[in-house]
Length: 431
Image (cartoon, rainbow, N blue to C red; front, top):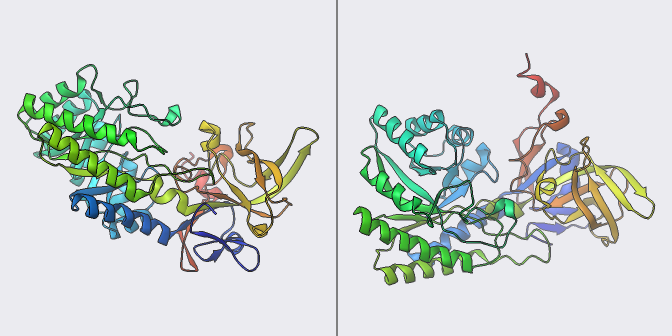
């Protein structure tokens, strides 16, 4: 099994968090996102414990809520002592609605609107990560109007190429995010920010990509970012106190995947920052990271009901489910790989080759192609594993399909955290 959350019970059914997935499908309907609370909490604690051990606790762990944003996730991560990373006014509103402390919120985004920036200032968010010069000027003017001085970080493109899909690389110069080092943008932005009266430049930020299984890119980023902090100190007379290295830690989607353990990743990052700080003569900064996928991704699965099983002789067999790209668009977007199990036959061998198809009126509406599952029949329950990150977040109402419900399981019990949308929800804003 990919996760410790998953097991097979005496009925031969797949379980998550001690709960029978077949019963979950019957009780809550399908499609259904199922999250294991203990697994999520354990991931939060692993990151915090690693920083305590290897960096004396001088660190912040921001949950990157774009991975999965709902009120219960903000309540859960807040209870574990994490901060929250939001990237839109909607995510900020959700976090605040859940009672998340605004001082522990960092606000990202490459094109924050003036209204979103004003909302962040009014809400007294702890940090705003500035992406571009226009935003810097806009934020300074808005802060002046409101009589506040906002703490900011500058988002930096450190020029690191990591081995991941092109759509989720973000650290190279040709990226819509942040200030580049190679052409002098980063230093010029720092000079401008330190001269402003209504923002306080306290740190720098980078995010090199997502679903990364290597450690060297993070080690390289540490040297580059500390070096930049020293350059800013020399040229701007400002000693930065924070460096945020973003997220990107990979998870296990397939049995063949080998993600680096969380503790090892943090140890190597802390060691690299200490080494670079000594090398450049720079005081040890407060460190921050922004894990999202690595907190919630493999603590989750999605349940479907199998409908049509269509075999095209000498071509393939399509196994159609009652969801698809409307609740998981990642395969259609960039060929994301998943493991799938017929949940009510989890004790049987996965010896059937299937292309899992969704119900949307789109040829590209597939969840996986040529994947091994147990022999499927109409009415079976299909579980697609490791779907906690960027599934509900990217879900849509394409073909006017209501978005699924979500439940949290813990120690053999379950509770609803997001209600299933209804047809009435779909037309509520129609005129």
